[in-house]
Length: 199
Image 1: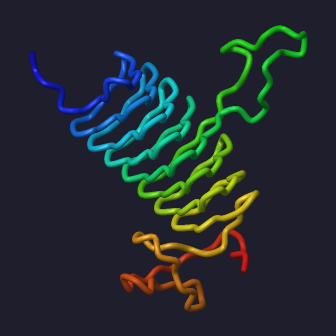
Image 2 (image 1 turned 180 degrees about the horizontal axis):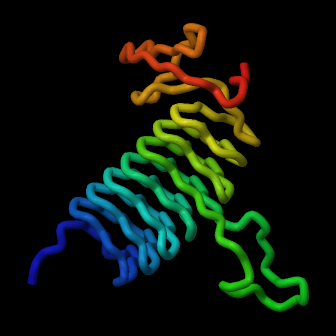
């Protein structure tokens, strides 16, 4: 019998109907539901919950206690901090208007995509039907209620943009006329903001 090219801790609860890439590690007490796809070289931390049909790319780090519900797609190279929550229901209710318990067909799944290289801070909450752009950085504890542009730095509740970040995650310095540079790795960027950056 072939040895699997991934590692699952004995206490993790992982469905047999899961596609797991080579080099991925799933740690203790994690739960991975059916029809989940996890790419190569991922780290799924302790107590992480991944709901059914979630898609996760390669080289993703999901830290302890993160909750990722049905309808979420996480592209490659994404960091998810401890205790982050990805929601999927914009109008949650336990019951229907007639008082009956809601079932799988009684609500609409909100789809969310986290693009390549983005980072979600510890304890952040991502509401449904959103897009988090490539290399965006969502600060710890932020509550994201609208789309986040590529490289944007968002903070607070509700999350607001306070600047841009480099691929290395350093906050970019605004050089004027839509140009920014990184004080750490000296990369230069040009952005056309969709809304004014909060000061």
